[in-house]
Length: 511
Figure (cartoon, rainbow, N blue to C red):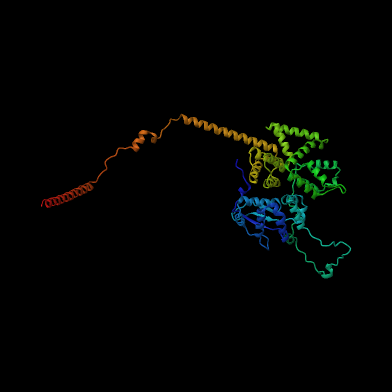
């Protein structure tokens, strides 16, 4: 199956225009650098700055640009370009608008609306942003950033030793005699600060807030203590780390001041981070014990009906092809946070969960493209079924994209999908084997054809041919004959001279 990725639909030659509806100050740039960049990454941060640099002062709109121009300026490809853009969109720094009908190739088809970041106060008070930032930086660096963006008071001005002597407006300025109002149209065009107070909002359909309230109230925590901020933190911790209602109840009990009956959100956040960072073995054993304890913690009047619904759901999955063992695994996948689940498998294989693997798992959860329980099935498939030594972000993203395109949402659906693919792969392998066997039988029935060079007679004809007399030209033959006659005459003359010398020597000896 060929998977379609978001960047495959991007036309690099398409025109885009960048707009800026709100002020982006130097303080905003500091917030982007220190508080946003650890979350969105370096490429997305560079993309934001590239868009900001192309906006023209005065009208706060860029000239029409091609996507290719921005990619060249950043020195990235289509995949990195779209991924960086999506990271800005998901965290509230960029809004994208596309035009469906266009008649000219030179027409602007995409609008990038660059958003100002939240101020530091809203980031640190926002459950999602603060949790992500603490997860990226760690508690020490997170505390350093808190101090960096906090105002220092050298003295306590509210004490009785100090009196405010600031001049008022009426003391210095004369009130105008006439009021000059502006039209609503002009007022709407004026630049202003970003009114947003949240970067993004998480919704959780799997977290039962009513059950969580009942558990907290049974532990003597009043409903007034469960403020909107506390609810948002519960949802964030559930989505990021996989904590369920019982886990959150235990964390909330540890973070509650019993004197004031208030839940300390910051303490709740720190406790959750510490618990998610514990060793997988210890964490896994404790989580199994908590899972067993849930059977007694959640016994209410409506629990019997819930169990009947679960039994009916199990029956549906059994009819679709899952075994009872696979259903037990799906329930285990629902009860384990993805980080702890991956740590447990890696340690059972004799390894450990690396920082990049943990980051890849966390980023998938942040994107909201896959449920934590379904992600656990994916992790088990990669590390156990495929026997991969480590988890890579690119592979996890490709599998998540494939499952999303095939409407795989629940962990049970993921297991059925994997079984179908495995069965199809086995059928294809068996088919290939049959084709190979059939082809082999056909080849054995064919007549054996011996190459000519293997035949001894052919080799003898080729390499041991009788030597034939060389062909001689007639002119060359007459020249050769003349030369031979001349050589013969020369030899005869030399022999005659030698005989005369011998005769003369004999005559002298006789005298």
